[in-house]
Image 1: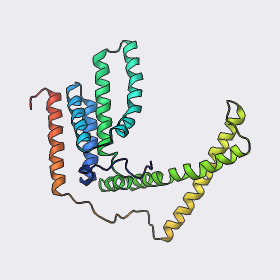
Image 2 (image 1 turned 30 degrees about the vertical axis):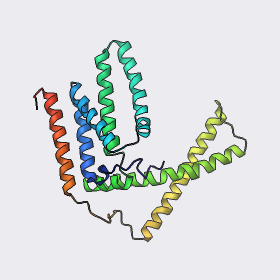
Image 3 (image 1 turned 90 degrees about the horizontal axis):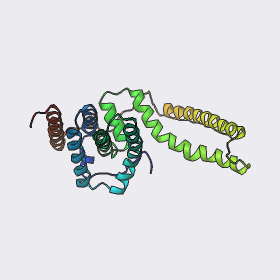
Image 4 (image 1 turned 180 degrees about the vertical axis):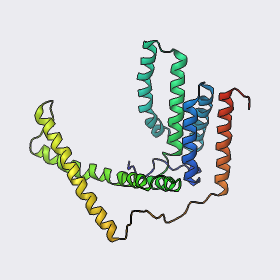
Length: 239
């Protein structure tokens, strides 16, 4: 699947202001990370599980995105247990926090296409150069991988190259990397010249402006209520 298109377009989340989704994802991730107890992250995880079900996210694709994190957390948990740094409670806290943060990011940010994300970052006064790097990387890394890399590697294989654990293989991969850097630089120069011919002055001007609507207000109130609930649960105050 292309990195430019989102893996799922939720019917209600996709209509919410991307700036709100970006800010909420960051706030919830930081909140879950700094919590000392497991209760608040567990409530947050339950909320996003219900949100995924309500927005009809495809569960196989969702589990596939959570699988690498859980495999990594498995090794972390084994290290914690065998080193004596903690027991079952520590392992449960690691899994709950990790999955709550990851599910939050996947649902709120992962369902945005790259252009919407860049638009939201630009409105949040993120550095224009950082936004441009994000856009160009998402567009041309895939192009370089599928066109330049495959072309060079197919040429190597047609000349009898077979990877092995020896100096010749390392030398070939080094030359392959050098060729990719050179061709990437040449392509970047051509793209920059074409953009300058079309009046590019270093700034992307969005075609439409983001507006805060009534449904965004309802979403903001829901996010604020969840955030306050998490803070109250963490501080021990009954909401």
